[in-house]
Image (cartoon, rainbow, N blue to C red; front, side, top):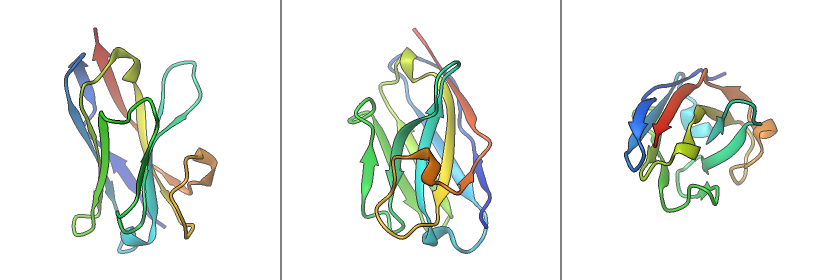
Length: 125
């Protein structure tokens, strides 16, 4: 089992940047593909980005491509979401998640086994 803790959220003006770390407990961090999802009020949780166990493959939603970058640091047991050129429509609670399956990272939230508590990102116009 792995426990996930997100941080780094906050209030930022449009065009600004934030970096969200997701710290994972346990020694099996490298055994999980990881993903970021977000949920705005009144909306369903949506895929943002995912990264393979090795970090060699990454995937992003079209809405964030070119602006958000997902990465992971094996030594620190931490995954990151670097968010640049933020827009008001990026406002949401951001969640990190871990997937025990072997294979390509998934865009489906139902695939993921473990979730963090979420961190609020608010982008003002």
